[in-house]
Image (tube, rainbow, N blue to C red; front, side):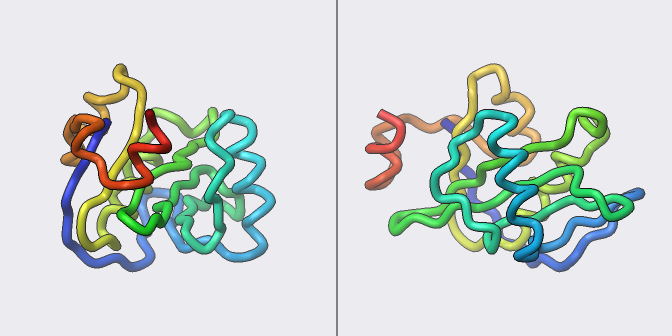
Length: 138
């Protein structure tokens, strides 16, 4: 399990040939399709919490911060297959982190920890988690 504290600001970000922007209502179907295709947790998915990477009118990546009473979780990160390994995921993560205040949690498989460590995330134990995070991940 990963935890980070970052304090920055966020605005729309143009990176290379794509733009990172807040999701719109008409992005909801694409967001849900990408989450379903990658078999990610479909719970607590609200388009209003998402940033999307858009290139030539096509959504090529998504990510959100899930809101809980005792904290926030960075999640639902997906980059379409033909745009992976090109920094799209990292740009989304940086933009999500930049608009947050206070602790931000991320849950990932152990082999992905080195990737997320580049963004300042670090491993934490289950006993260090607040309230519903413990229930969700026990």
